[in-house]
Length: 233
Image 1 (tube, rainbow, N blue to C red):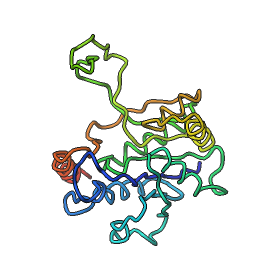
Image 2: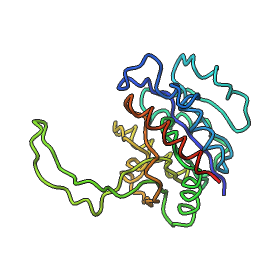
Image 3: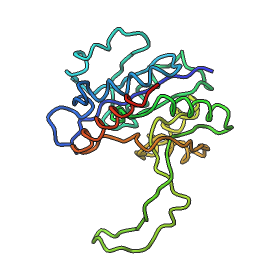
Image 4: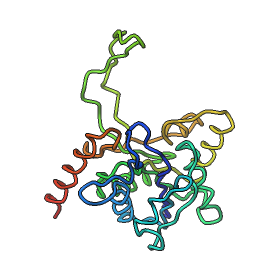
């Protein structure tokens, strides 16, 4: 089984409101993206392709260039285009049935054991791909633009979807190309694969696999990473 990693890191972090893109902000003394890379490299990846934004001046200072299994490519304006560009960088190396593991650069708290479970479960699951997540445990409401609550949503079949997400190379490439041709921008790879008729397995993971979206998330990520360190064997 060959498995390749893709880390879209071209986002500007406009919602975060900082001058520095959020993937480069420090958490416990290290940039967010470095935590993500280190955990991904613990998996049996042939290479990890990091898709960078145009004129990225922060990446070179991290010291990852030239490290084994680390490669970069130009990212796109949207996540979907960044993943397509990374897949293009694997042309001629990744086979149709190889696995592609895509992770958010701003999910630094992902656990190595959850990535290992995703790879093992998806490889033996008989689906086109798999993804990490956990069951929704809050009441769900559908809300109008006026903020009026319209109705309740049955949470029993609802899960929070996170990353990494993992798909056959040929399946993912075809799904993203189809989305581009149709002018559709999917929020994650599983949506694109399912829209193209593919099947996806949900794999349970720890609920501390948070995404850095707003400023308080940095402090929370720091706390989680410290607790993970304290509880590691």
